[in-house]
Structure formats: C-alpha cells, structure tokens
Amino acid sequence: MEWGYIAKYTPMYATAALLTLRIAAVGILLSLVVGLFCAVVRHFKIPILNAIAVGYIELSRNTPLLVQLFLLYFGLPKIGIKLSGEACAVIGLTFLGGSYMAEAFRSGLVAVEKIQHESALSLGLTNGQTMRYVLMPQAAALAVPALTANVIFLIKETSVFSAVALADLMYVAKDLIGLHYNTDEALVLLVAFYIIILLPISLLASLLERRMRYAGFGGTA
Amino acid sequence: MLLTVEKLNKAYDGLEVLRNIDLSVEKGEVIVVIGPSGCGKSTLLRCINGLETIRSGSISLNGELLNRPKTDWSSVRQKIGMVFQSYDLFGHLTVMENLLLAPMKVRHEDRKTARIRAEALLERVGLGDKSRAYPRQLSGGQKQRAAIVRALMMEPEIMLFDEVTAALDPEMVREVLDVILELARDGMTMIIVTHEMQFAKAVADRVVFIDGGEIVEQNTPELFFTNPDTERAKRFLNIFQFDTPK
Image (cartoon, rainbow over all chains, first blue to last red; front, side):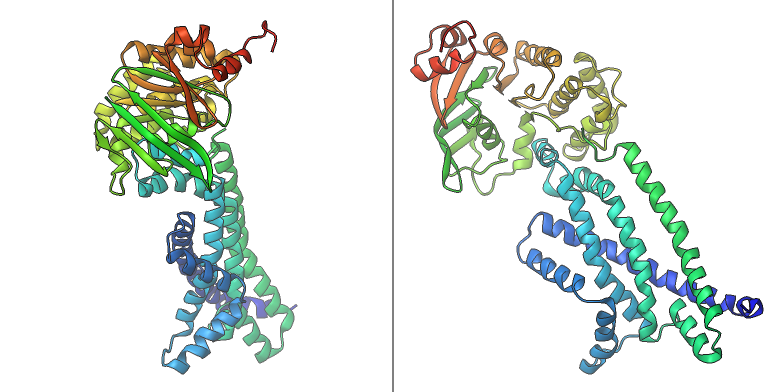
C-alpha cells in the first residue's frame, strides 16, 4: 500500500464525494416528493392518476437504474433532447427512488387504522385535511424504517452514475486504476469514502427510528 | 324533526344490510339501537353521517336532504358528532391537540377560545389533568371520554355513539356511560348503538330493535324490556337472561 498515493488523491475523492452527495441529496428529496404524491394518489385511488402511478411504479422498480440512465443519456438525444450527465443522474435517481418512496409511504398509510380516517372525516375535516393532519404524520412515522432504508439504497445506487460520464466516486476510482494501476489504493479509498458518507447516515437513521418508536408516533394502541 | 330516515336501503355487493329503515329523531330525544351482531346497527349510523353511501331512500337533517350528490359533508358532519368503538383518537397528537384540530382547521376558531372550551369540557368528564397526555398514555375509558369531548368540541346537534364501550374492560364501561348519561340529561339528541342493556334502559327515550337489517320494533324502554311486542325481540332479550331457560 502506497500511503503517499492515498494522501495525494484523497482530495480528488473528496471532490467526487461531494458531487455524489449533492446529486444524491437532490435526487432523494425529489424522490420523496414524487413518492408522497404517488402514495396519496394510490391511497385515494384517484382515477387516471392512479393507473399512471401504478404503471410508473412497476416500470421504475422492475428496470435497473443503469438501464434508466442509458435511456436518458443515450436514448433521449435520438429524439432531440440532450441532457447533461448531472441532469440525467438526478432524473434517473428520482425516477428510481420515487417508486420506492411511494411504496414506503403507502405501507405507512395502510398501517394507520381506518377509524383514524373516518373519525377525522366525522369531525368535518375534508379528505385533504385528513391526509395532511391525521394520516400523513402517522404514516410517515410508521414508514421511517422503510424510508431510511431507501435513502441508503439510493446513495449506494449513485455508483452507476460513472456510466454517464459523471465524475462521482466510482468514476474517480476507475479513472485512477486505468491511469496508474494502483488498484489497491484506489479501491481502499473508494470503500473508505462510501463508508464515510453512509455510516453517519445509517447511524442517524437508526437514531430516528428509535425516537419514532419511543415517541409512540403512529401507535394508537 | 331533527333527523328523518325514510325507506333507507343499503347493500354491500348485492348483500342487503339495511332494508326499508324508517326512523325519525326529535330534538332532545335519546334513541338506543340494539340488536344482534351484524344486524346493521353500526351501518345505519355510518350512513347517517355519510361514511357509507346508501342505495335508496332518504336521510334528512333539519329537513335538508343529505343523500344528494352535492352534499357538503364537511359542514353536515360538524352537526353530527360521532364516537367509534375504539382507536378514534389521533395517536400522534396530545389530547388537547386532538380536541383543537377540527375547531381550528374546520371552523377556523382561534386557539385561545377553543382551548378554553376544551379545558372546560375535559374538566367535566374528569380529564382535566390529561390535556397534555398522548392517547397511548390513557386507559381505554379515558380515551373514549376524550373522544366524546372531541366530538362535542364541534357543538353538534346530534351525537352518534357506535358501541363506544364494546372494546373496554368492564370496570371502565361505567365511566364512559356516565358521561353519555350526563349528556342525555343536558338534552343532547343522541343515537346510541350499544349492547349494555341496563344502560339502554336507563338512558333511552325510545328503543329501536334491529334484526336482519330491518327495524323489527320501536318501543319505550319500559315496554321493550318487560313486554316487547314482537317475538324476535323476546328471543333476543332472552339471550341476556341467565335465569330463564332458552
């Protein structure tokens, strides 16, 4: 192991890690928005939109992210739409993450007692108010374990972004291996950086899960 | 007439659950609905406040027809309070937040005045010290009393009780029924679905006996419990008598 090599290229990894994090953050945030929307649409079985949401979720969950990215990056230009690698990455991650987040939110909604919905309606709340003030807070709390698992899953999925020429962690590692054949050092750095990113998020997630559990959120019993 | 139900029919997937229900409730009247499990009692309550759609017939509140496509259920339901068997309090909110949600979001009442009303009502049902508790920290009886207060916060014209003590431990039944009895004394109009016969006797102005989705008998509690008109009511009441042979 050449420690000098590791020291020399650590800044390059750090830059790539920031890019990875930035795209992951935007993609995950948008995934949560898409997921929330789809979950509500599916919960209320809103006509037309429900069918679209179901189609989207199946398509998104049953195709690999790499294929989705290729479609965006190489397929869209064929019909005249040219997106940057970064835009492709964010859209691709959102497309994939949205369906997973939708199913996580939906599992939370299903777990909330039906009476909660009905007793909210019986007080005169509208469906929208019921969703916002009664169902969603409880569903989100119940869905925390699934949501945090998705966050970690999506950050790991960013490793395929190198395929659309984005200088993320994976890209830098492959690049360095190609340049200098210092495979060990390049891979050690790669693993180290993924752990540096994911370990704190993992710990934060389990802390959040514990808090939600002890707060008794969602638990009506 | 405060509430009028006429020729109401309700079916789930072709299975008739309510047939030709006629029921009128005057202001201040306490109606107790009894009948075997699955006879349609709860469904009747749920039809009245629009949680279930009906197949035919009519439901009117203060002469205003409710089963129209254009009904503004949000405003109708403010006049019809309902308490369910269990799990009705919102688990993520404290008792006080449970009570304030609908007055603030639906009636746009300001927090301070709603709070004052809530505190007075909680005091009345013996929950004055529980406003900051979460539902999971309450006993079953306390939860149901809080749920009743939550419905009262909307100042309804009529209250529907759907077997509110059925999920409670026996020693907690009384504290909930006492709250309902007090409401009756204050002149609240109520339709109460219950299996508590002693309570029915004590609180009812009129007993409505439903069996097989039909109203079989409507009678005063005195006559219904001692000398019912119908054979089916007699048979049903016998189930609750341990000393008479079946």
